[in-house]
Length: 185
Image (cartoon, rainbow, N blue to C red; front, top):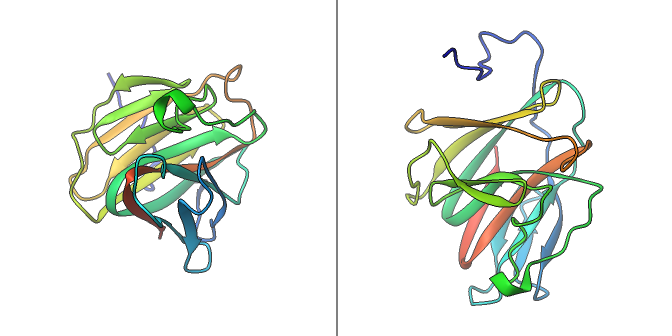
């Protein structure tokens, strides 16, 4: 089966997103995570059981192909997209996790992925090591996401269902309650 990943050599209209910023943080506890470095980094302020939180990107995506480079500096993180206009509430039975929302489509640093708010196994190994760089590709025209670990060249992709994650999409990053730090490159 042919791969449907979009590489820069194959695509003529890929928008390399260099100006994405984290815009807003969510968490069960206020001040659990914060945005620093002019909106380019999101980090845990105080690790602990209820300190899990997430950050959303500034841009909205609804057409064309976009690539965002992200560095996981440390910790357990979740990287993907969500529908900007869908309701967004934490799951208090899971210590305030946001990735169980049906509009979330993402990859987890422990090797799995979440699609339509449900956990699945992924074609990525557990990437607990620090300072991993990922390229997240949002192919809005085909309603498809892909991720590449630039360090070991592993990749995975998923389809996004319109009924659960309508446009516009925005960047979604969740940081574990044990602490973490993610930067946009």
